[in-house]
Amino acid sequence: MRLSERRVTHSSPEAEALLAFVSGENGADRRVLELVAKAVIDGFDVNPHIQRVANVLLAKALLDGRLPVKASGRPKKETTSFKGVEITNRFYELLDGGMRRDDALIEAADCFKVDPRQVERAVESYRWLVGHFLEDRESFRAWRAGTDARDYEASVLIDLRIREKRPPVARPTLDDRLTAAPAMLDGLRTEFYRVFHPTAEDLSKLEVPPLTIVDGDDD
Image (cartoon, rainbow, N blue to C red; front, side, top):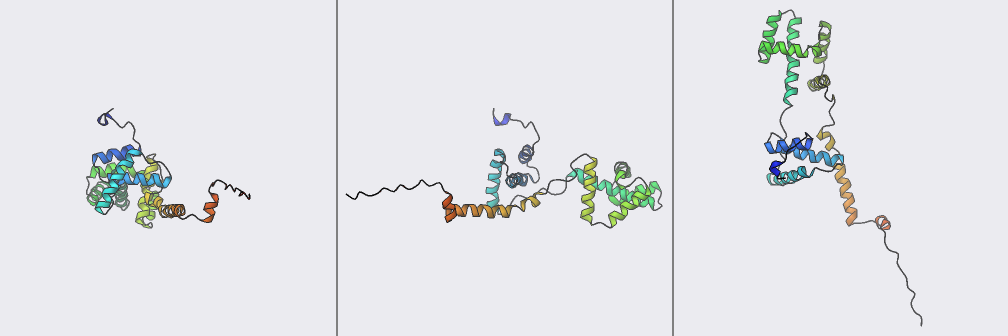
């Protein structure tokens, strides 16, 4: 089978990374290297196709003096969903503050530079999170006001993932997992140092054929 006739028949991370690389997508080169890093940290074999691409990317990185850049931003769907929650919250802030519904729709739309119909759709989609009732919405707003912005956003995204039946908590980020790399390097350095500079204990563990001592002939 010629390479041009091959087709990816599944959506494994490796296949997705290669397709992104072929398509020249934003951050695709970095994604390939990250897959190799994850495999190394987790003790798995690296996909040979990914390894081939990674080898060339590393050679180019040495030439350029820098690694490929990461993909920018959050996934589009999550960005849109989070914005929808914020629109919904703003709409209910205005409504609960005494503003007429139509005016609240227009005010919220102006605040987020969207059409009032988009505000209506957002409210329909995300009021379950902000709160169906005034008491629930007041609790949501109090929690939002007293929470660090990054923690607030992370918590909202977790709720959205649970709602969409996606993993609520992702695996540790690559940066978190790569914190094991320095210790792994130290271990490898020690391992190979002892190959070239074996200690007496190392030598004692080697399977050395016993010495045969032959008595000399006194005659």
